Image 1 (cartoon, rainbow, N blue to C red):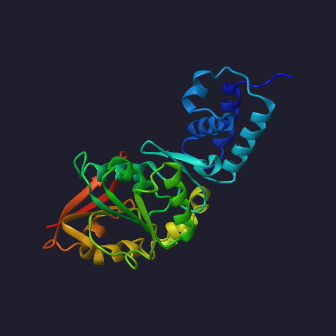
Image 2 (spheres, helix red, strand yellow):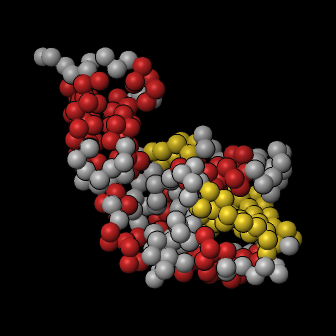
Length: 281
């Protein structure tokens, strides 16, 4: 039997994925083949002429079929990398995005190395931000809250997987409902997609939990609730950091009273005004 090479499979898979709504058909094919082979993407590409066994090829095409049905790559492989951590990923929470990784990095830069910040991660989902900051600040105290028990279960699994379970407290809470105390930083990647836009989203996004996507009529319902009371949970000169949708920056900034707050907007790598940082004066 003539076995196909990795390069040949990637070429065929790229052609198939190019026919569906996906922005990076080649990269996604590479991630899926690496997962099917149990290799890193780099190692898989370094030996692209190697033949692929019949069993591994079958597994790869099953992955491609799932991608064609609209599942995110991270759901198919069951894991994703985030700020140097390998996290479990499935339909219980959003698949972490590169933009959210940027948010975590911006937040880490707010504190000096060796600091012991008290941090609250609202709408924690998979726990990605909370765990990234826990890894960055071994002396910090991190609370991760979410309304979804399924998401919290996944986040707890990720804490054990990354051996950070002693460093993060998980809390089921509708935003601040069950939160007590004050924090140096409150960070959140809340639902911010307008409800009317959800049906037009890609099948990949629609396969993710609606609870983590739906931000109400204009996408700002959850953000308004956070901004309205965040000051009561921040230490003096504490910071609120939010990931927001494209085109929402001005509306979100308008939620903060200039007499009480200062801050601004940061762009993501694509140049989108993606993050709002508001600091108590």
